[in-house]
Image (cartoon, rainbow, N blue to C red; front, top):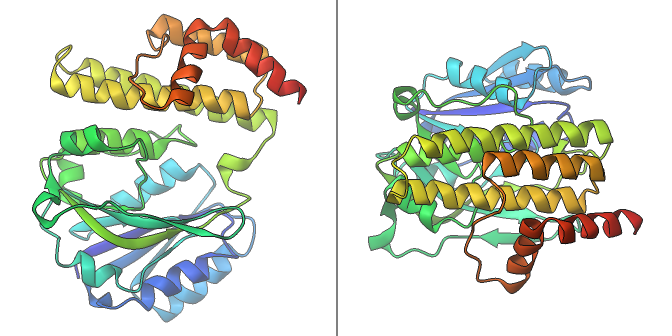
Length: 323
């Protein structure tokens, strides 16, 4: 029993049973030492459901706390976990029946990365698998980041607990989004050994009530501030590397990828024009604009140039708010 599973739960009454059942019914379940569920001040029946499971299964450990956000909830899970390896998953998703039998063959590394299925708004599933040869399924963390397409999720990785502790890797408490991007940028940069598995072990489910899909202005501004906090922290982490070194350039590439993604969200989520102007000024002062990222995709390259020129991007934002 060497694996701790950490699940932050907020208003997950409709999905947490599916998530827990997928864990309890998976083969090689003996690999699991504990399932830590952190109820982050839910206002629905989440705690009632968790209590039922907690009474029936000793392996399920429950923590009930006031609502402080997913980053703090995950940090509490990290503090309470005692397994040799950690899997941080979301309460509205579920795992493959073969997850544990696959993982137990590879628990000798800092991080294990694996494939997943992703559900879209129509209920269709798309597989996301890394096609690697057996001779190429191990790399350093920097090599992984260099090849990564920008999707740095938590739930398709398993982390060695002593590795996270050695490097004091945890979640920035004030983040409500992109916490996985910051956490993984640091974690992979510190990792000496990463196993990459061409197995689909996780299903990410579409959730209309997800925190990232709330559209009120107040919440959009909180998401924006969270993005700024992530980017400034990655910027500081980059600056700890020797300038223009291989490591510096890899972190820079990851940083530019997520910065450009932020500007895309400013456009599509129809942020106020005054706020977009403030971001352009702030990111210019930080040296994050102009965005310096090599792009082979013509559409992305055009969008990047519009952001860097600023006035075309502002015009595009204005036009998008009219539609």
